[in-house]
Image (cartoon, each protein chain N blue to C red):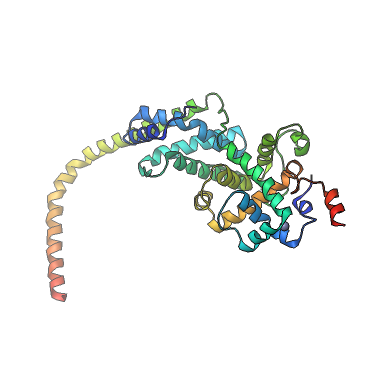
Length: 133
Length: 202
Ligand SMILES: [Zn+2]
C-alpha cells in the first residue's frame, strides 16, 4: 500500500501543505486556509486530489442513509432495561412518598415553631439593616 | 426500522416526557435502527454497539426532561450515543496495557487482515467502509461524526471531551489517514500512475 507521503512525493511543498485544505474544499467546509485555497485554484494536481477526495466524501455522506441491521433481540433488551429503570424510578418515588408521610408528622409539629423562629430572625435582621443603613 | 416524520417523532417525545411508557417504547423503536447504526460505525463491532446503544437510551430516558424540544431529538440522541461510545472505548483503551495511540500503525483486528487483499473485488463504497473500519477508533469517531453525521465541530468536541481545536486537528489527521488507506482505490490525484508523472516531469 502506498503511503500519503508517496502519493504527494511528486508534488511541490505547497501541494503538501494543502492536504488538509483539499479535504475541506472537497467537503465544502468553511474556514479553509486562504494560502492553501489559493494554491489549489492554480494547481491541477491538487484539483484532481479535490475531485478524488470528493468521491470519498460522497460515499461517506451516503452511508448516513444506510442502516446496519441490529442483532436479533437487542431492541428487546433495551426496552427491558428501560422498563427496569422505570420500575426503579417508581419504587424510588413511592419510597419518597412513604418517607415524606412518615416524616410529615414531625415536620408539621415543628413547622409552627420553625416559622416563629424565622420571623424572629427576620425582624432582627430588619432591625440590623435599619441600624447600618 | 420505522422511519417516522419528524412531527410524529416530536409528539412521541412530548408524550414520553409526560411519562407515557407506550410512547417511550415507540420512540425507542422508531429511532433504534439509526442509533444502532451510529453506535456500530463508531465502535466497529456488534458487542460494543449493543452496549453503547443500551447505555445511550438509558441516559436519554433519564435526561428526557432536560431535552430541549427546540433541537432535533435524533441529533440529541446521537450526541449522547457519541459520548457513550467515546467513554466506552476510552475506558477500554485505559485498561489495555498496550493502548494504541492515534499515531500507532493501523491494526486490523478482524480476520484476513491484509486490507489491500480484502479490498480487492469490493466496490468503491465497500472500500470506503473497510478503510473506515480499520482506522484507529479515535480517528474513526471524528470522521463518522463529522463526515457521515454532519455534526458541528463544537458538538463533536464536547461529546468526545476535547477542545474544538483538538477536534479539528484530529479530523485533519483522520482524513489524511483515510485518504492514505484509500490511495490504491482513489488514485493519487489525476488518476495517472506515478510513472506517467515521472515521465511528464522529466
Ligand atoms: Zn498543488
